[in-house]
Length: 309
Image 1: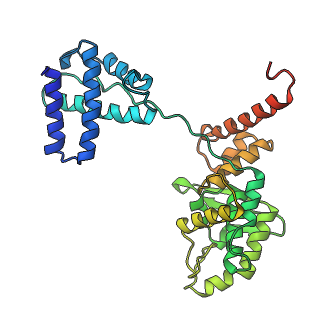
Image 2: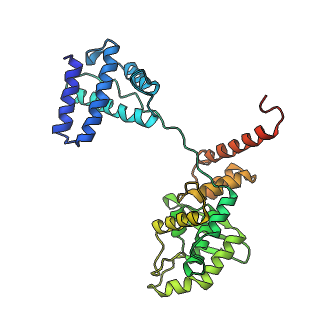
Image 3: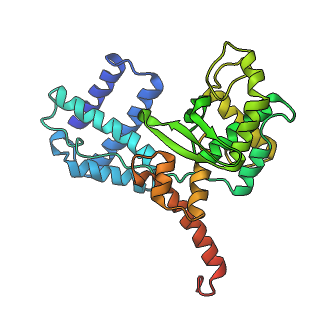
């Protein structure tokens, strides 16, 4: 057995005995480090002292590219394998088996940026129309909640955190005070349809709900008269999407993503959308421009006579 293989066995024994890792976790470490040893052997490296930062970086690249025995790994899977390798080298230094840690400067690959999933305007309208069981008090609450989420771009935690006094609405326009991450506040305009839905809820539904509880300033209430929870609000969105027959995956952020995308497609600039969403950096908002560019590409490809030439 090579000195490297002995060091790996010592590390695995440490994980099993002293760290008490679960069997499945140990199997993963054993598999990942076996592949690492195989790579090092192919490079003619049999001792820890011969491993350099470039060696570890080359191993990471090999994971991403794959070979005849192994398919290419995703960024997340390659990152998990690198965790095992870095843990091994840190242990080797602490245990006096090596003088330096060649993996310290090798960072895991960044996963591909996932674009927000925006619904079409038609799908959003269908979800709003399907809010709540028809003819019930909760239907008016659910419609008001979804109108506020889509009409303001509020995070779901911001929406359920609203108090009645946070809204200033008239017949066709209004504003809402949202409290975002880090307790940062922002005032966001509310459109006519959202104002109408909230007004109807406040007059015809909320008094019924508040009478069942102990009295609360919360805007959106549950059936017991208490503040609506994030989980319950999530359920409102999912059930409305199901009733509407929307096949796309719908999550608590779906209406917020759709709000941002539809604003940009309608001509709003990125800075304005940044303020409305409460993003600290415009870079966070710019991910939505990638969505609109994709739409523009589709229109261009379909309409321009030389687009496909």
